[in-house]
Amino acid sequence: MPDFQPSVILYTADAMNQQGEAVLAQFPQAETLEIKQHNRLPELGMNHFKVKSDVLVLGKLKSQDIKWSGRSSDFIAPSLANGCFGACAYCYVDRHKKVNPITLFTNVDEIMATVDKHVMSQPWPKAANQTDPDYYTYDIGCNSDISLDYSLSDGVQQVLAFYRDHPRAKATFATKFVNRDMLTFDPKRKVRIRFSLLPPHVSKLVDVRTDSIEKRIAAINDFYDAGYEVHVNFSPVIVYGGKEWRNDYRELFRQLDSALRPEVREQLKCEVIFLTHNQVQHQANLAINPKAEELLWVPELQESKVSQYGGWNIRYDHQLKSKMIAVFERLVQDEIPWCQIRYIF
Image (cartoon, rainbow, N blue to C red; front, side, top):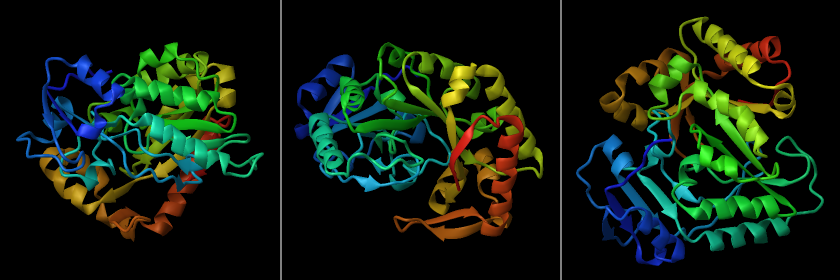
């Protein structure tokens, strides 16, 4: 885990409840400044990476919409945080904000009440689907990395306990970090952690300031032993070098196969998401991580698309992508046939 020691904490007045005060108390050395809106920050005079290292924002989440997903989860829960210490070159959260430090939302009691009201309004028993056979699943980390947030606020542990103890709901989140503090919490298989995996040399280039792939794979058995349900997230799948990407994924699958114990393999499933990139982010990366763009921005393989939220992105050409998906499925079947693909696109 990174040693996150912010030198500046920005906060809104309505974030200063018991949890907000507790976060401030963790970092007595930090300069504090009250702001009016958590999503409109003053000019900080810091570059992209320093903002993520040195700034923490505390706010109150006012819009608590719950959205249908049907992929990684049944629903996307209201965010517990926004932003991340990491600086992944393809991050869709970064592309929507000029500067994007970690913003923690301190009104977790309201967020949990919103989720409870929502899940209790759903038909019960739940109809089994690929997200889970028994419980309604809520992704709690779409805009941040919960493994990081866990060490910054006890509100995150309260949320995990809420899902663990709820009779109808289950939490899930993807992560690129290994937070061993989370191993002391017993989620009783009601929290699904999804470790994101790429070929290691690609991850070093595009997963900026995150834990290594080797470290993530090595943690899977431990998190299973601690009571988590553990899946993996092959995302984003980046295509490069003719057959090179296939060989690299074959080796990645073999690393995974050799690392996991039989009982862990039995419960592990995966989701697969091929790269979607963005022109605004591409331009920004040319200044801060140009080597990554040699893998991410390949116009001869890509086509434009409008995202479900109205943004202009690029993805692999749909005819090529169908072939890429078939190749990936074949590799999984060849090397890790025990790993069920929950969905792939």
